[in-house]
Image (cartoon, rainbow, N blue to C red; front, side):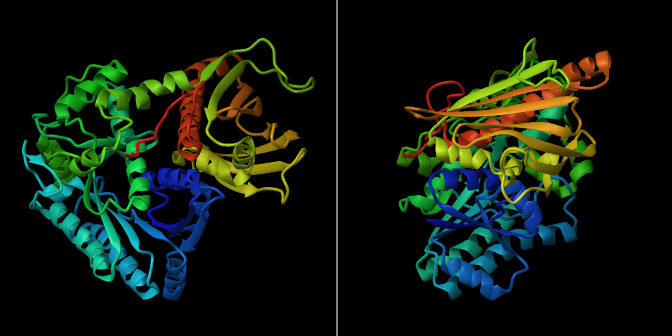
Length: 485
């Protein structure tokens, strides 16, 4: 299939693009900034600018089999001024209406999967809410209702429309959890108000599986609640995060403080929706992370076990280069042939897709052909600073592995071996990095306090990309994530 996506560079969109590519689907992303999108999505996704003429959009849609509409400005952050509300409406209702009109002109695709949110139900206390429940009151509920109505207009032309009412999505390097973790790690996290309000949630990998199923499975149509089956309150969430991080959570956040900071937007944090994933449970959808404890074990504790880092006494670094002091290792068995895996990891354009977005990866210069001796220069954010990093390919063995080393950049030495070999399940892949940091004994302290935790987060994110793009099988890094009915 060929899938057209809006919102592809967002937290959920990036993950879905990788997941769709695993199934062999072609993906075309509708983006505002093509350079930024290429850095975030890699080489495997086609791009269409939102500034392209309307006939280009119609022509592109005419060659697609499904549309996934994930566009929408964040509802949390800026205060809901009149201008901000207009932006929230236009980025959802306006964009959806434009897509539906272009689909009608093109005469296809015949499938539209359009995002919505549990905010549709408004503030409903402890009432159990399924897909048949009525819309609630308030700005956010009206926004979701109008958003869904814009998508439903496609039904009159025979389009199968899935309206996915998503809960709070938890994942690494984005979404709500990325905002929650810093204060909780600092020991200043706490429940919001009484904590009795229900907080519907879902793990990123489950919502991506639901989206992929909605694209392919014609049994899914209409409203679908994309939330985990375990209902938790804000107090439950607070305690679970505290346990996962081994932190106390004694400080409640009074609603008045949230209203002072976010104005009307604070309703997204204090309202209660006890949402049930009725349609998915009826279909027999298998959640990979049905419980909050399991989700947090993957997202928080998973960082500790995914990557091995420690001092090294021996290394393959040639004489004449600085001696590394540390070694990093990560391995996984992925469910794809070695040729496909090597092709993905050896393409410089895909480095951005494997790098946390907060690092603002951008290629500055690269050769036409990648091979031994080739040099690649890129920019990357480390802490508060943007740094230039130039690497050289030291070894190039197609289908088996390659080695790149730092020519110039933040490390004293960086020697990165990528090894691939065929196994019955697919491909065993291994990253081995030997590195050292400048500044002598002070560099050692910086390594322990800052560099090692950051490398662990970066390579854990890389593991997530591997899991989404290829799936993982038996062996190191095993993580079965098939959730289809």
